[in-house]
Length: 349
Image 1 (spheres, helix red, strand yellow):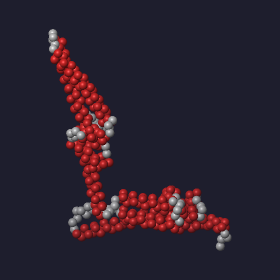
Image 2 (cartoon, helix red, strand yellow):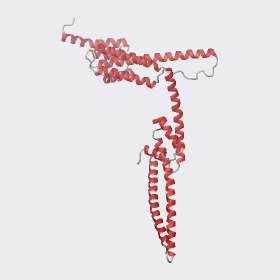
Image 3 (cartoon, helix red, strand yellow):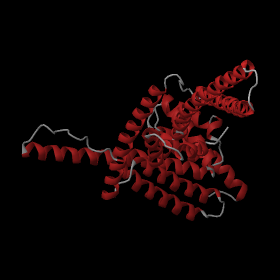
Image 4 (cartoon, one colour):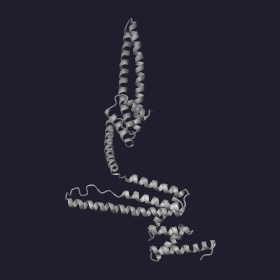
């Protein structure tokens, strides 16, 4: 089976149709969006050419066969056939043999190409419909990507990054921080500085994710006063959206960083955050308060998820369910552990 590039070169080296040239040009411009279409179109065009070649080869074969049969009949009916007639028959029979071989090869190539196209989902009996479907897809991709490029150009002019680009940068910042934390080469103060730097950069990036103002909100109102009010309302909405992203996103980033530090592992920290989020759904306490209690228990040598945190939250819930109550109960649970540790090292004051 020939490669895709070979098929394209085979067809383009001849008189390629305008349709195939259009497909090759479109795939060159839009790359992955139309990946494989040039090869598909080239095979379809080659299939058409093979059909014509097969018809031509068959016509030539049957023409020569008819000539050879006529010569044989003439020689058989002649009482003294001349040498010229015999030479003509010999030449015709040689040409007939070559024509038969060529016809067989062309038919075989045509059959192979038919099987390839059918395996790719192409209806070889209706190539016109296949070409129409390709043209429609090219038109749709062209419209979509041209629109996207215009938006990208506008972003570049204004210096505005897409949400995808911002999220990628956030992931890169977080990954860089995790590499530092898990390296084991940073002191606690260096880890704290790294966490602050990471949080500051993530906050800056999340500030770029405020939702854009919907185009045409007051497109039918031409009053200058209403236009000014709409602009002020849009600006307020954008500011509020930014604040919301900074507040919610920033809190979770800080809590996640706190858990990563106490667990000394990004993986364990992420697992702890998932458990605390689930616990926040099942208890009257928020993720922030649960994270604080989790950290206190962990710092004094207790495993929060062995039942200590659940017991504290259950007791606090029975006493009113306030965050302050949860904090006092947690401290009461870690104090015995702290005194025990003090007695091991030195007398407690």
